Amino acid sequence: MTEPPAYLRVAQDLRRQIEDGLLPAGERLPSRARLAEEYGVGSNVAVAAVRVLMAEGLVYGRAGSGVYVRGPAALRRMLRSWHDGRLSGTPYVLDLPDHGAGRREGSSTTVAAPPGIAERLGLAAGAQVVRSAYVFWTGSDRSMVSTSWEPLELTGGTPVALPEAGPLAGRGVVARMAYIGLPVDRAVEAVVARTASAEEAGLLEIAAGSVVEALERTYYSGDRAVETADIVVAAGRYQLVYEFPVGS
Image (cartoon, rainbow, N blue to C red; front, side, top):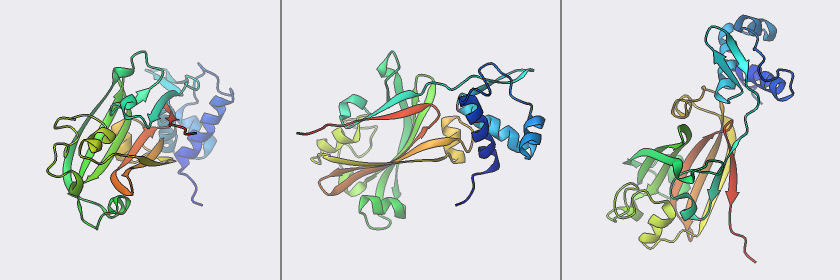
């Protein structure tokens, strides 16, 4: 198994010290030179490790003074619900005073499905799909990025071909597919923790290499996949909470 990059190993050890109280809230972190010496790494590695902790909200900088421990921050709970009306197409973060504070920005285009996406949707290689890329905000924070793909053979020529246009503009996949006679009755979602890509880090305004929760979701109508999406959430900020019905 490949070892994580040196800066992540340094960040992991510093994180452990903060969580264990060895570096209490308010204490100044060792200087870049001191960290580099202690861990036997270059100064750039030490800087990158501290940036990871900053992105996670564990430390903060004071101009002209240094970097100080803030302490472990309480994770905000992000609800992921089967009930489309609960989400209305945006993240639903439970600890906000106003649940309507979420918003999103994005764009859609028609592209040939990449091989992995074609397989997830049960399409022939190169089939046309509508690709939609979004950035979600919760309050002033960028909370989530999402890229979704829908088969154009299902939605092409219908009023819901573009997620942000037509009579159901801005509504979720469940409502839009029901509108064209494709009731969504099943969703499959797989979650893995990994490091953010440079693009994801930039979109979420976190340090490159920060840990994220990556979700691969596919909606089905019967046996037909009607949408698949890749969703990325900053792991240091949010706890994913799942709500689903339980039958008798």
